Image 1 (cartoon, helix red, strand yellow):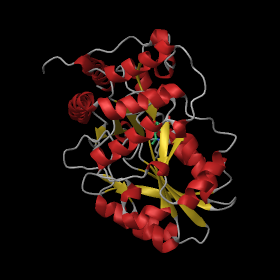
Image 2 (cartoon, rainbow, N blue to C red):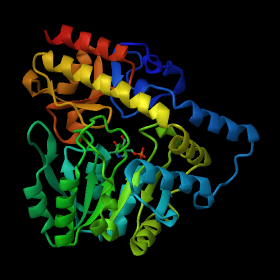
Image 3 (tube, helix red, strand yellow):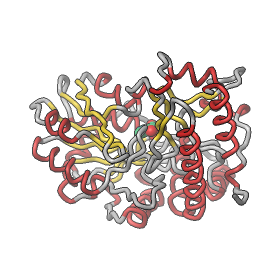
Length: 381
Ligand SMILES: Cc1ncc(COP(=O)(O)O)c(C=O)c1O
């Protein structure tokens, strides 16, 4: 394999990294939380440096930062074939606060919210934090791919107290991209039962499978008035620490309710997050193409190697830099402990709702994955 700039990653110990701090002082490779070990794209860093050179860091109202909205509209049109009006965009300092706001905007206390399981832990806990009841939509394996249990979705959505579906596509941790036919089915079920759709699409620009294509849920004409879509440049361009994301909400009433749910509690997106997002969405297409090629190589190599190890199996994810590893074959009461004892630190499957699994982050140089596989092979032999 020819050398790639992604073969090297800066040391993160000195930078208070959440991912690396967890195992400080222990010989465990951190392959957990969903950020990558690569530097952000050079045009993003140049844009940030250019802004900092001015020196004044006063308030900037995100809605008045026109280049930001223009960048989002341009990106959605160019990459997703989706024509979005600038005033549909609501800046938020993270996708997590945004789906909490969606719970408040769409539901009254005691209502019920559909969430796929397994799922990103803050999505699993969002209903409870907003005094709502969670209805679990199971995940099923169909023709070597993870997807929703649509029969269960249909049955649960029929509950008269069910108001909202918190969807995650591409799926974290399972890595599937909901295709157009699947989204049509989701839309049909939601519309039939008066359930609003909040679609967390934070991983949508990390599609690795040439056969998969991301379709923003709100792009579907029949869902436009009944859904909100949450996105960010944060995962794709590795700028999660800057706290910038956006919701796309075509329906004016829903948008007003969403803004109201955040009023006075959720701060404005900070200016550096806006600057970085704008640069990422306008000047980094080449960097992203290279990143996707590298991640695809990591995915293929890692999944092939893990599938050779006793007790482990994994379906290559269609998107994301996260591999959802089935460790049930280890017959271990504590899968996380078993991995950590081997010197590898994934995200614990139990936090996502499936304790026999582990989520391995492959957004790192290939050499880190090679070391992880060597350690696992030695420990599981
Ligand atoms: C599905 C999903 N939603 C949201 C987030 C976090 O979003 P933010 O950092 O913008 O709050 C993550 C991070 O891993 C994620 O995987």
